Length: 251
Image 1 (cartoon, rainbow, N blue to C red):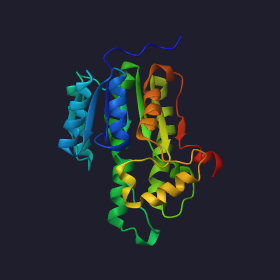
Image 2 (image 1 turned 90 degrees about the vertical axis):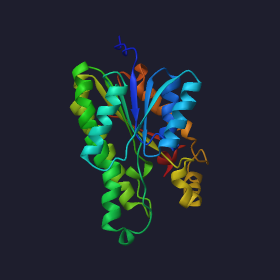
Image 3 (image 1 turned 180 degrees about the horizontal axis):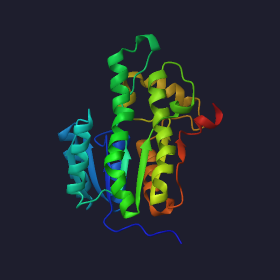
Image 4 (image 1 turned 60 degrees about the vertical axis):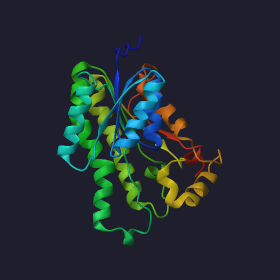
């Protein structure tokens, strides 16, 4: 029999003030979790908390400008405090993208990209996963991208950062799985979020190459995140799940 998830579960979602992170926060709250919404924009974060509470959900906002170990540590501490002493589900949804030729990517942009997309999840997992392991239960869900496993022109740096995140999924599954912490990755395709607005036509063309022939809705990605966070996924470790309308199956 699969172990029962503890009551009063608490989920921390980074990058939760827009896009996939916002959809995940709302979905997990509807599933009965206490949600810690994290992001840089206080007004948007507080609006999401208000929306969740209006539907009788439980949510808190913690402002976080994740840039170094100190800011990551502050987020972990505050999330644990507002969560009543524990964080049971960690969703790494914060991420940035850089498009363009390799030669046009500056060192500063490259470092910022890897800092947000790889270093922050690494450090935050290091802050929170040991306590999950000590309790013998927890779920960590990484949000990567189909670019991590495909050669897509103009996405070299972004793809490399997501490939690193997917490899962390496998490594953390080996490290924390024996202690009851499930680590999995959701790999979205082109998704209708503000992140794609600067190159919306490009991403619509990518989506058109998939059997679904459309952009994903953030709620569809959030449904996969919610599954990995739920007791129904109790025997699933180290999986990288495409939510891409079939793009990786045919390209």
